[in-house]
Length: 145
Length: 58
Image (cartoon, rainbow over all chains, first blue to last red; front, top):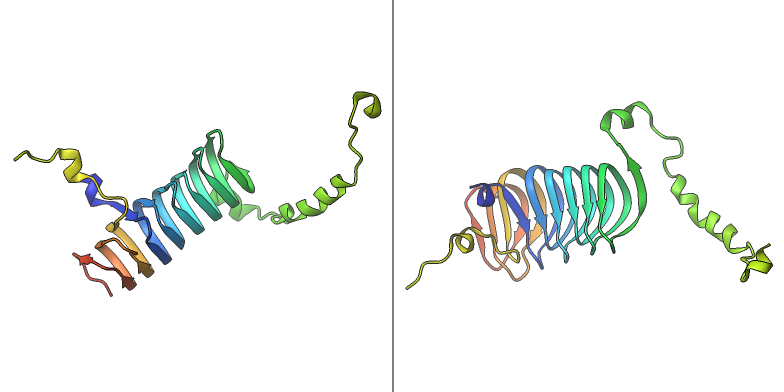
């Protein structure tokens, strides 16, 4: 009954824009732009999610962009994650791509108690990278000594 | 005539869209070229070639 009774699937080729709350298990194989609250979220290999996710468990095999707040996150080999990732436990398979701001041991309580002044500090990264580009990199051990 | 295996009968086709359970869904849904089955609370627009709605879609 559980298999058919409480699982929501956004099929391949389907698209949804909006808001989902109180979902138990949701699998995304299509394109979704949403604010989602669920127990378990699976983004399939061809799935594409853009928006916020709050869930106990998120398995990402496709593309995710947005702010995710999850107890456990599993990024499989085909995962591509960008944006902000707040998690308690994280598993990453070889090949998974994380291009995002990652916060460990996130809890709603901590976030409310101590809002970070440098919440967008990751935005400084391009400048830092530019400075790094101007540093001469030695091409041989003698040159570097 | 042979009966279908249990797994085949109870599995959900991943190309189709199923909105099942006690969730609340608001927005616009386009099922693409595949059927959409709704047995939950959906408020908004649904576009689908085949729409099977067990519950009320507002």
